[in-house]
Image (tube, rainbow, N blue to C red; front, side, top):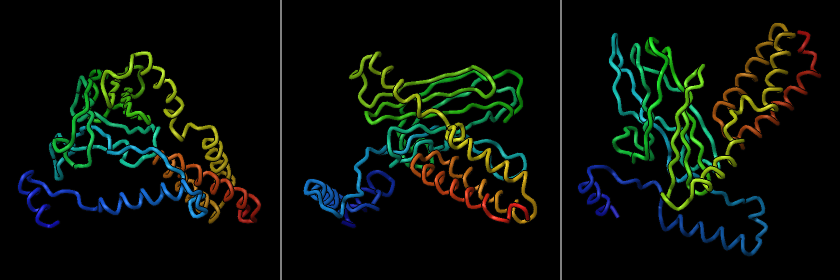
Amino acid sequence: MPIVRKLVTRMFGRFPVTTLNPDEVVALGVAVQAGLAMDDVALDEIVMTDVCPYTLGINTSQQLSGPGGAFVDGFYLPIIERNTVVPASRSKDVYTVRDGQPKLGIDVYQGEARLVKENIPLGKFVIDMPPGMPAGGAGANVRFTYDVNGLLEVEATVHGTNIKGSIVIEEHSGVLSNDEIRERLDALASLKLHPREDVRNAALMARGNRLFEEALGPARMQISRALAQFESILGRQEPHEIATAREQFQSWLDSFESSPLIDA
């Protein structure tokens, strides 16, 4: 109701999320469950999956526009977006913002707001950076791995070194033993391989690059665009999207290799 939204806005100083109709959401969920129970033919292709309910990310700094712009702290960098099918593992690279910066702090948050102060802090840790490096010259790969039980592992690996730091965050702290946590994290290890390193994807990229080197003229441009599109999808790290794109890219390469354009 509009009057409730106005009251909530005055109480909390921020607009409530109203993009979802709770009655409609419940009704649709019940309808899907009923259809599945009845083995309705219309739901043959529907598979119920677990998803990450909220976006998970870290605190970062952004540089103000203009010459000599200073860096301002407190901006949210999402790493695992809400509604991502779990288990899932995603990573992003971050870099230092000051010359000779000795450490890099990884502050983990949950939420959807642009500023971290409006999200929920989950934990933090610090890793050492190589000494004497200029701003932006040193960085780390930050990886979030999240499972269906709400177990979140955050790892940071400094580029070009063996320096690592990590934290494990439980949805319900104290429920799992250390052995159980380690067992679940070991089960997620295969997810930590970046899609670019997957043998199937690497083989397709190598095949595409070989064709690019062999082709001339307009054919090269076609191959370059196809490679760039596939690389872009790999960068999004969405397994289902990548599987579809890989199949399409392979079919495109098969078709291209049999085309006379390769000799153009």
